[in-house]
Image (tube, rainbow, N blue to C red; front, top):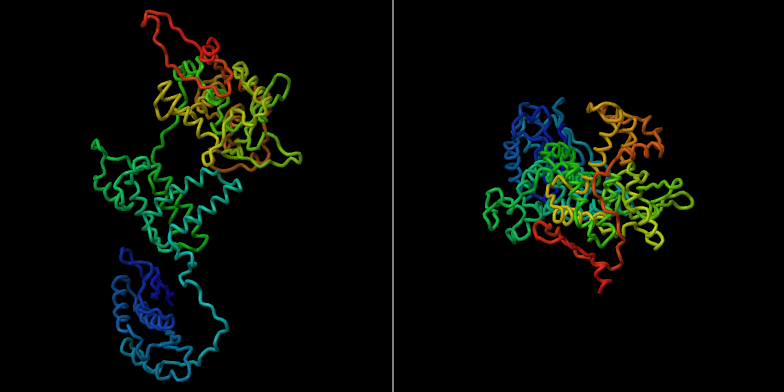
Length: 595
């Protein structure tokens, strides 16, 4: 028997839904998975009665065999329903079942006094199906059910499926904020997902989440590739909807004042938007608010999105490192905040991520033996656990479990004044080592990152390549130690770095998983390594770190920043050969003392 259901539309009218068996679907686009026909009534009992009549007709079509054309059958059924705009005498209010094996029709739930209705129904059926009246069996009505509760929806979805997409997105983001409070995800993840879902909400404005189909998702993915980037969308076609802006972009009618077209979302950005959408659809699926086929096909749709080429990050060259650290900014010096000097210097000698450096506290630096110092990258509040050994609540964030690590302080970092700086900060009672305050959504690295990229690197030094950013220090650290390991092994063959034991030491120092180093080629996790591989010794880390030689680069020693200090950076002065005079420079603090 074909499965049939009643589905109530948003205006209250019931539709009969019939699933097309796989053998009857064919391969053409017109052969769909199901057929829906409006019963033209808001009365659930009338709708059920009309659906039963359609079901008998549908079963007869199945019995005849052949491949279905969904549009033709829907038109045929709808013409039948058009005859019953007002419930005529004879419309059944009872159950009816036809058995093609025996050729019998059985009526159920026939109440006293409805026999004439049954006979009228039989006459109507005889006009449509070649069934003899003698094959009809009438059963007494079933006892009334006590406290019968009709399901909210009969298509397998919950009441949440009727909610507007914007409402479901708000509910989803609220759940993500709860996850952020439980430290399951970072606060930045919540704001990023909100931004990426805002476009989805606007694109399907006014549509219920339960009405979204896989085809809707695919069309959305294809369309947003024509949407202007966030920095360009402001002021473009004011008052127009997202779909109208996309339509103009497709027609190449969105242009700047100089006649050039606006930038649109890159393939990598579209991929990110679709990944955020997949996460949201998964949330809706758990609440039974989206169609099964939408949730099940979401992964294949996202996988079909072009991956795009993200701007690869590259290590700094010798020449670029010389340009950065010989910059007059460090030698004048012109930094007014500790992080403006220390973030690039610490990044060079540790390979740590920017956020890991900026959230360091004075409790994260320790002397593990006389004259030997270590840095702890952790998510503790002050670098210390509570007395009972439990982790303190923290505003600090790490990328993953492997990021929690301890590494020695490089000797050259000590020579540049790092330990003296730490002692002074700790004596003054400061908690954050570099005096950085965490941004509400972007964590500790937002302000220092903007300064390094936009001001120091781009403006002062003049390195403008998109592949050179603060993370390039991490690439530099790993690349140079990797080569040192290979050179020390007596070969320059570019083999897998994990083939050398010191390669595993390097992975642990920079916060990468040791297990993935062993099992990367197999694509599987090694239970033995995950369970029993412990921390490598500090001696092994010191031995490897000492192979990092940065003495060739002119790095100025740190000078204390005075409270409230505001020194203006003076670019490189003209050389004596250009001006005919010797260069003259004076520190702002010295000048103040003279005055």
